[in-house]
Length: 482
Image (cartoon, rainbow, N blue to C red):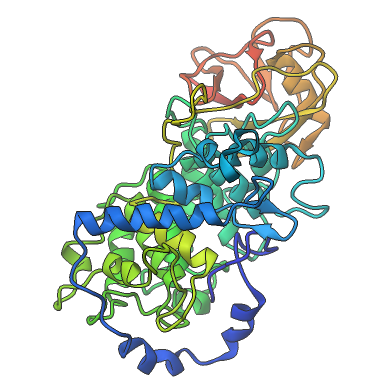
């Protein structure tokens, strides 16, 4: 299935009608083209890669709107933030005509904080895309504003009937990108903000969707023998490898090795390109290389250097117009394409699907921006998981209206009982009021050394009490055990 290419897609982070329609063309029809692609230049040197980064950043800067935007009505190049960060450029340093009041980070943060963003009928990949790019831009995705918490927005699409899946049933890509966003968009200090139990639940689903050829596709395959036996997609294989690795899976894991073998089997000897389902192209190569990058696998050596000395990075650089810096989508194209330029630059720069923001060069600009406190009376959301210690995990987005600049765990649990999406995250809590320790939750009561504990933003679990202080954007995890 073709890889998504439109950031506002209903079914994937990016997709175009053109490539969707092209799916009816037999894959075999592209074989001859893929094998006759023009060879790349000699294996890329560090200096050539550095030049590619510099020129690529220059091209991405040219995509910025006069108002400072990369996303919005008629302009959807927000994946540029992931590429810019990988290339060492802070979004806050990108401003049209040097007007720092219109810097890309501030404009993007204002867009994400808008009540009507992303649309009247959002899907989970909207929020995942937002979280990945906000993080790369130096915006804490859980603290975009007093009312916008992208982590909570993702939690709100948890599939209670199929724990570990996020988003529309029948699609797999929402789960892969949930893992990319939740595992990759870490705290400002670089810590993992979501609990291991949640990461493990997604890892299980990702593994279950791996096709027998070692790759993945955007649609759900778990439990479907025909789907598991079908051909995989280069793009989603790269994304799924990255999703596993940012969630804690080692690059030596058997499923990562199977995915590596799948990608290696798609290499075009003469160019180092991957022969994707719809032919050789920059986007598919970019996603595959970003997957390898996220796993710490060098796409320039070993398994990914062909017998003719070509690598996927060589192919990507051969697709770049210089000194203009943009990348063509397919060999032979005569002009650069924005999405291809974003995917190509991110991969050549060594990036996965998001990267912690570099230190800005703009005087006085911090590396991160984030809401610091609740605004009393302004509705907010928090991400909550409840793990009862028996392997049953629940996740939800909790809506509450704080009365102060902080809240308490008791406030969160009371709100979750009546205002959680999906519902049922919290069905009962003891005590129901006051400030004491939580002695029972959802029918599971403390017993001896086994008690309810809480973790905020990935910190160590400690005794859960109703008066535990909760700050804006905290990712709240409750766990029962000793």
